[in-house]
Image 1 (cartoon, helix red, strand yellow):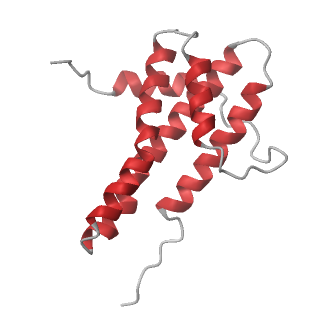
Image 2 (image 1 turned 180 degrees about the vertical axis):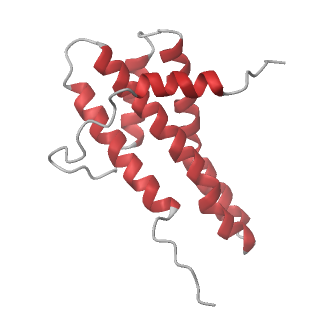
Image 3 (image 1 turned 30 degrees about the horizontal axis):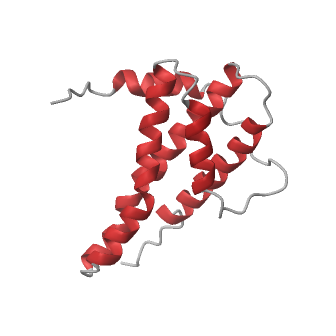
Length: 147
């Protein structure tokens, strides 16, 4: 039996998602007033960050198999911001807290400064309907209690 080669790795997906977030933030910065499209863009960023966070354990699994614990932990620490900002953006969007969004989006943009973006947006506008998707995901997620 031959080896299966996975062409869509977690790192490749993470790079694509980071570029999508960067392009979305660039489009969002050109908006003068916050509107439904701006909320969709912020929700798209939250969803992308959630996906980025989901790729982290897949990336470090190979290192942990080889007992590279320090490298795996450093990588987790390097990317833990994605899950945090995803949760903050999700909560702000679901609570209609528009005042919190610009500050958080600026912090996310600062984290993604090293990402090389294309001059033009070639992916279209994938954020359409993202707020509703975020609400659907948040509604289907089990409720958590603070202890």
